[in-house]
Length: 156
Image (cartoon, rainbow, N blue to C red; front, side):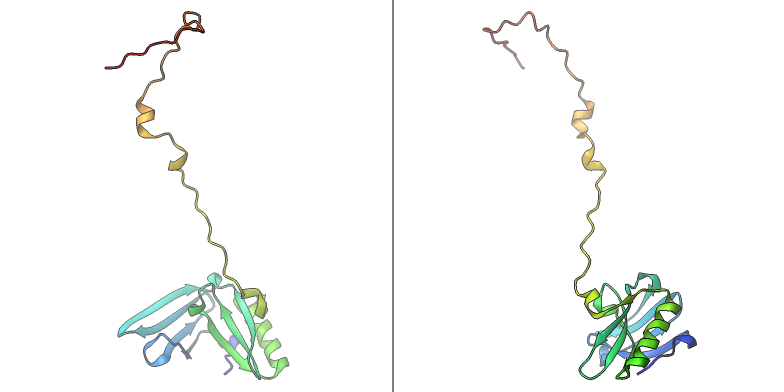
C-alpha cells in the first residue's frame, strides 16, 4: 500500500476492527480528514482537521515499515504507506510531512498519551453567596474588655 501525497485529495479504504465489515472509508485532503464508517448499523462521518494530528509517524512492522498519520486517539490513526524499502519510506515520510505541515515522529515518540489538562475554575476563587451578602461586624472597643473577663454574646 502506498498513497501518493502529490495527488490529494484521496479517497481509500482502510482496516478498522470496530467498524461493520472491518473497513472504513477515508477521504484525505490537505486541510481535513473525513472518516466514514458504520458501527452496529449506525453510519457516521468523522471530520478531523489535519492540524489536530500529532504528526507523520514511522512504525516498524515484522519485515516492513509503515507510515501513519498519528492522532492522540489511536482509533483515528490513518495508514499512509507500507513498504520494506527503507529509501522509499524515508522519501515518503518527508513528503507527507512537508505537504501536511506536520512533524516527523519516530516510533517511540507516540508511546504515551498526553497528560490531561487541568482547567481553571473561576467560580471557586469567589466568596460564597451568603458571605457576600453579610456585612462585616464592628470591632468592639478592645479597651472595654479586660483580659480576665470574657465577653458574653447573647443570640436569639
